[in-house]
Image (cartoon, rainbow, N blue to C red):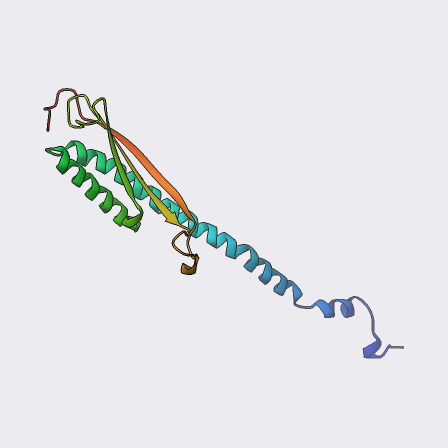
Length: 158
């Protein structure tokens, strides 16, 4: 004899109450894991862009500095090279700093035997941080340094 439909108990009756919950659980789990992962990936991409820009900027600024005719022109060329390298990577130039140092004569960088060291640094604000945080938004500092020899057998420049 058969049991009435409403009274039937067994495996199918137990699973009916949870039918479709695996899809909901998977969706929520995917959202909870993918959103932070996406944020980390965006932050890493921003830092990598700045790293490429500062690295390229320091190399080109060093080359531009030692190829200039005099030191006043050299600093302008180095600054223009850094700005161009950062702009190519989409990094705002208002956060960059450029430091040029020379050895053995700090006051005469374009003398034979000098070693010109260029350091470029910038700060990368974390993505998607709202503006109401203020001007002290959390950021990551990125810097690059490159040294270029002026050459022992080159002409001394003022």
